[in-house]
Amino acid sequence: MANLIQNEMMKLLARKRLLVIGIIIAVLVLLFTYAQYKQVEEQREKLGTTDWRAALQQQIIDIQNRLGSSRMSDDWREQLQITLKQQQYYLDHNINPTEPGAPSFMRMFVENSSDLFIPLLVMIIASDLVSSEHSLGSIKLLLTRPVKRWKILLSKYITLLLAISMIIAMVGLLSYILSGIVFGYKGMNAPIITGFTISEGNLDTSEVRLVEQWKFLLMDFGLVCFVAVVVGTLAFMLSVLIRSTAAGMGVMLAALISGAILSNMVSSWESAKYLFMVNLKLTNYLNGVAPPIEGMTLFSSLSVLLFWWAAALVVSFVIFTKEDVY
Amino acid sequence: MSRVTLSVSDLRKTIKRKEIIKGLNFELREGEVFGFLGPNGAGKTTTIRMLVGLIKPTSGSIRICGYDVKSDFTKAMKYMGCIVENPELYPFLSGYENLLHFARMLPGANEGRIQDVINLVGLQARIDDKVKTYSLGMRQRLGIAQALLNKPKVLILDEPTNGLDPAGIREMRQFIRALAEKEGLSVLVSSHLLSEIQLLCDRVAIISKGEIIQVDTVHNLLNTQEKIIWKLEPLEKGKRILRGLTEVTETEDGYLITPFQERDAGRWNQELTKQGVLVMEMNRKLPALEELFLELTGGGGGGIG
Image 1 (cartoon, helix red, strand yellow):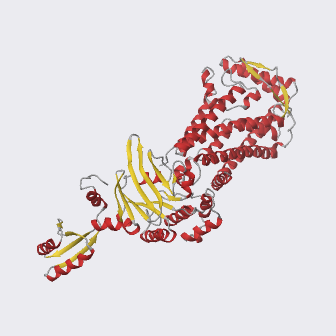
Image 2 (tube, chains in turn yellow, green):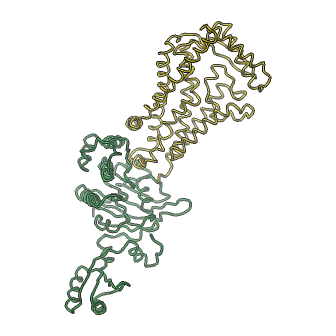
Image 3 (cartoon, rainbow over the protein chains, first blue to last red):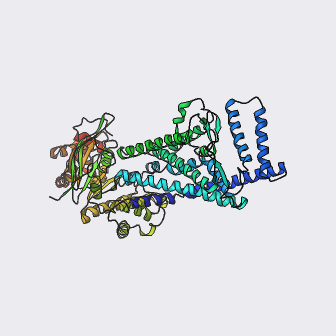
């Protein structure tokens, strides 16, 4: 088995996919760092002070002004009100929500990339793990060795899991190191508030508590890893089912993007919560952002994703071991 | 008689209710090159893919050195090496890395064995270059090296000379013959070219529309099918003389065709010359595959090809 994984790793590295992914991450991190830096600068100019309390106060006033306007859907109004309450809570308890520094930036970056960017990177690897063997024709050599088919697929899957951990490690390290150059590396122990839950449109603060930033980051990374594994497994399944890499990638991309769009408009279509793609933004549960569909919880989202993961894995292995290769 | 290394019995494959392979039976023995001859679409590649375990047969059994491909897959594959269609290796890896990759999947294929096969196919100079820089002939050689890594007893090659230049074809032919004669391998070679099978194989199975029409030694098969084409001057007199000696057919453009009989051909020629007929041309000719099929299937097999 170790031999087979070694083989898959050799092929993965020879194609320099991970290097490309690393470069993509680095470029994006630099872009976001610059954007963040500009934002901070602008705020400083507008308020004439770098005091975050004043900035937060200003944001609250902004939101209140927007709530005052009458042309606004009820959904949006509810969301804004929840955000407002959260920010008020931060202000009252003297907690800086955007404590500037590399750890905060890393948290912001990971949370924002969890539902589209990281799945996209994982897809780059997962989509052609099996289908490329078909398009190259090397599958014919691979499957005529004295090795059972399920072992070959398992070695590919384990390689995928290794690649996913490397991708997430790269996201973490690069966002920390590169943004730290601009913002400094302080703030690992800053308190972050969590435990907001939203029930029937109301912000429930009964379980709110403070968590040190590094702990919060660990939770974030755990959830992001889980999402990445689920998306990776689905792309892996498509790679087994659809022999063209481009087609498999297209299907997966369409699913991910539709998830991003659906999240904004399915609030009244309740059964959509069983689709995997509206359940990808798990980190929102930690931040107390309202879920796209009423009644979704961290637990329900994890269960839905777990079900999709298991189904994809079963389908991949059954098809791969049974199919005729032409 | 030498040992049987590959045996196929009543092999069938049905795809979408259409029977594509209709009950094949044949055996390969140690040290022989066995040809698998048929036109495109006859079921050669499907059969070969079943032999190597890529396609599951609907019914029937395939045994490699006594191990059933279906129930004892890993043991059966230990004794088999194959190239199905073109040797599709990883273009982004070097030749050596490709061999290393496949050696890792084989029990007992160590670095020494990799060096051996590299020397065997003569790729020492370019083995560390990426495969995408290789010529087709080099890829073909690397493919063979890969197939020999596990010291197989049975080597299965699907159209091994496809796309090679004449020199490459000759080289490949000599190489395959050497493997069978010196190493005692059973080699199964598929082809749609009669001339190639004739030069390369000991025995041949002729396959058409998913059925084996005939299995025989190449010698027997061609002896009964080979022809001589004559161009004689004057035509009528020559025809009359040949008619007295053997069976003659005449083509529209003035050639005469007789069966080829090694012992008699010279005598016929002598006879013609003696009676004052000029022999302008005398060509030994293999029947085209289509003609062979027509004859073997009793002339009724229209639409083959």
